[in-house]
Length: 108
Length: 89
Image (cartoon, rainbow over all chains, first blue to last red; front, side, top):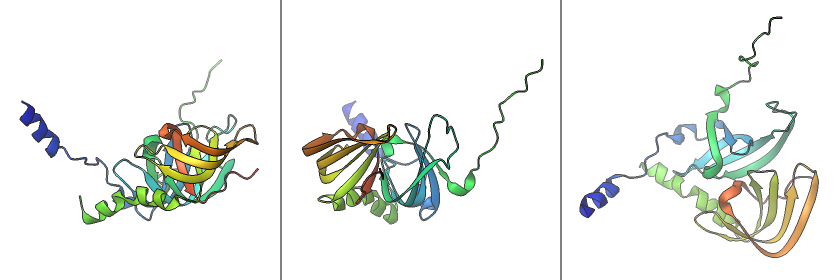
């Protein structure tokens, strides 16, 4: 039994379900636990999803801000992002803000 | 794993390693930021820093300036900015 288990472990290498190498040198947006958002050019990454971003802009959320990103942005330059707190990665081009589609009109 | 991927695997540790001895600005998941001189780190990215200044972003002010050394728990670290001086206040 034990031999079977260790064989299994050897075959189970750490494979990413998603290949970030296609985003290298492209601008991506990253969202973190805690509500922070940042965008920058992806320079490197590792299987643990730690990222290296260049020319990073950070967007902060305020209580009144909600999703108005222009409020508090700052330039951070070269930044290392911890994979443990990354929740979302998407290309900067592939997204845009839209009006809330879930608001329903209340009839009197 | 392609050859290129193997190179990239080490880029994180390399970059942080280059920072050892210089100023680094650490942004937490919360509104707290830490600026200090990096002395070292471990596999979990717990960090040992020196000459540390702690910033709270929301109340708009500098909080505590600590000397000696601190051990910063890597659990809540979101971003590491080498050579960063912290938020402008």
